[in-house]
Image: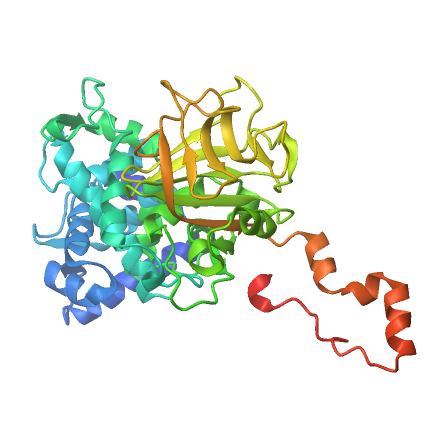
Length: 459
């Protein structure tokens, strides 16, 4: 029996490489060393002391309970208050490489430490909030904010609650009923419900990998963990004014970034903000035209935050533009993304200075009935959806159908377009030989020669 149990354990360890096994084993040995004990098991107090402030205390307790609940198939299990090396190893195998069923068991044990068959929706919501709080803690303490300043974003506490609610909107009870209403807080969810939930919300597994690896200091530099971090938090560029505060909080930045095309998820560059550039439609156009894919975010006078992703560079012309990657979204009071339906190709529209066509910026729907519209007479807009926008299946994004703009910002996403890099390296004197010749005839020098390299924070 002992050989069979040992064989089963070794088979499960095949999910990770020998190098990964060695690192995880070494971390467990460190735990044991801090316990000053010859026993190869770890007490909760030792575990908590070792993790320290890397994670919130309630998440540390959840992780310990989950490790403690791992079934190794070995009859010589550790004392009830301890965790063994085998449990520690298999926990990491399931978190890093487990299939949906294996991960669902981990999540179930993170939600509740009791041996029950169901958990309440409110327990799942509390776990989701703890996971998001832990993710933000890891990013802050371990310097993975990539240029984002927590003081330059909205309140993360509110963002945690909103993102957790977004996660819960994809959860179903044991009888396959949606449990996205607060009054259903006591609805029961099975382990199968949790497995289905993880399939619907892959960000939960991503958050868990990062929180466990970085919080417990195991496989911190592993390529998968580094990739997760790069995909979650884009590098922030272009914010030069210290007083700038984004309309987005860190949880919503991570959520929206996860819905962008993978090739542009790595970098956001601020193009326009009413707090910096003023309230002018012509200035808005001047800052976003020809800048590549953009994320437009605005807040109405009622405090609703929403916007849209333009997958192609904005052009001023009286025709629709864009492609199927465009989407609309809400960020507050609800967080959600609304994607292409296939009904029409009215992805994005920008026009200015014409009498025969509507002048303004629009996304989805149709003329005078856009899913999102900003009028060229800056300050007003509309979000019309009765009941849904035809292009994106989005509801009314703003508090009122016709809204007043409180503030607005636009982020270019991905690398700066090559034509802009080339353009920034040239002045009018580079592209106009006559102007250069006239300057030289007057005996004046080219003061900007060699000084037009693109600034680092613009790349």
